[in-house]
Length: 62
Image 1 (cartoon, rainbow, N blue to C red):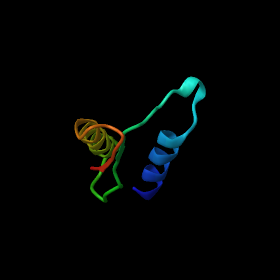
Image 2: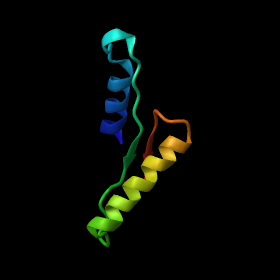
Image 3: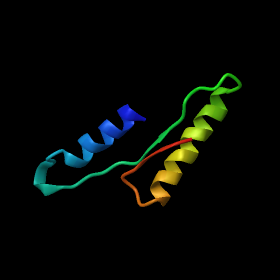
């Protein structure tokens, strides 16, 4: 979460050419003992959509 938040801020603050303002939303999931690769990716994907639904330019954990 800390790294994802740092990345989000760096992207939002970066001086892109032509005055473009870009942001990103990031979904984060940590591996759990019972996880398959599909369940881990699904939680990260769900967290990404939660971040977008909360107004974008957010980091959410699944």
